[in-house]
Image 1 (spheres, rainbow, N blue to C red):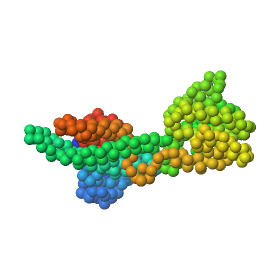
Image 2: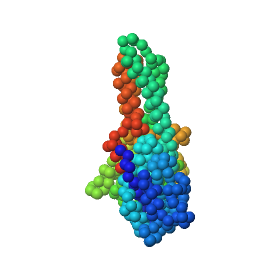
Image 3: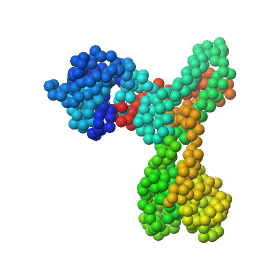
Image 4: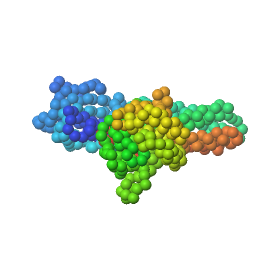
Length: 469
C-alpha cells in the first residue's frame, strides 16, 4: 500500500504570513529539492547530513523565487521514515504556490489528507493509535485535551495494549500447542496463571472503557446548559463567564429566543456554555420554538445550571415554595444530569433574605451557589464547582484516558471476548473453544494499534487529517 512517489504539500495554514513551510516526502524528495535549490555555500543537498538546515534560494531556471531555509531529514530517521525535505519560505501566497507548482512540475504530486502521517504508520514510525493522536494534538484547544493527546502520541496507550496483547498471545500459543497434542491429554498452559492474567486484563480493559466517559467530554468540551425562567440573568451570566458581551442583555423578558453557545477553558478543561430561552408558558410561536430547543439542549448537556432570581424569591415563602417545585420538576425530568441551582441577583437582597431563601431551597437542591452575574460576585466559586464535578483524577495522575470512539468500540469488543474466556476457564471449556475467543480478543487488540487494518479503515481515519500532516 506504500506509494513510492514523492508527495508535496503546504504544512502551515494557507494564507499570507511571516513564513510558510512546504514539505516533501519520498524517494526523490532530496533530488527534486536539490534541482531547484542554490545553496549560498555551493554544497549539494544530497551530500549533506541528515537533520541539517541550509540557507539558499529556490530557483526556476535563472529566476529567483525566494530566499529560503531547507531542512533535510534522511530515511529512516524522519517523521515519515522516508527522505523528507521542508522548505521554509516567506509566507506570501504567490511564493507558496510558485514553489509548490515548481516541485509538481519536477515529479512530485500533491499529498492527500494525512498522507505524511499515513506513511509514518505504514513505515513503522508510529502505530495507529499514535497516528490518530497526532490529529487530536493538532485539534486540541485546551490543556487537558493537549495532555491526553501528548500522552497517547508518546505511546502510553499503545504500550499498555501491546503488553496485554503480548501476554495473551503467549498463552494463546500454549493453548494452540495443546490442540496439537490433544490425543495425549496434556496441558502446556497453566490454568491458574491464565486465570490470573485474564482477571488482570479484565480490570485494565474496564478502567480504560470507563475512562472514555471523562475523555470524550474533555476532547469535545463539557456541555453546560444555562436554564431558568425569563429575565433571571442567564445571558448576563453567560457574558460574565466568557468575560465578553456575547449574548444580548435586556430587561424585556424573553429576549433570548434561540440558544447561544460559546466555549472557554477553566482550569485547563474546555466547557461549552449554552444560553437558552427562558422557560415559561407562552403564546408566542417563536418563543415556544426557543423553549423547545432549551429542553433539547438540556438533554445534550452534562451539567445543568438552573438560574433563579433572588429578588423574585425575596417577596415571600410562596414564591420560594413555587420555585422549589420547579427545581424538583427539572430533577425528575433529567435525573441523570448534574444540577446546580444558581441564585442570581443577590446584590439586590439582604443577607437575611439570602439565608432564608438558601435554607428553603436546600431541601430540594444539594448544590446552591449564590452569585451576582452583574457584579461578578460568586463567579469564581461557580467555576470551581464546575471543575469539581468533572472527575479529573485520572488526568492529574497521568493515567491513560480514552478519547477515541474507535478505540472505545474495540475495547468493548475485546472486553466481551475476555469475559467469554473467563467464563470458559471457570466452566472448564475445551481448549479449542477457548482458542476461538482468545483469537477474537487478540483481533480487537490489534485493531487499536494497527496490527490488523483494512484500506477502508485507514482511509476513514486519515481522511480527517489536515493536508500537509
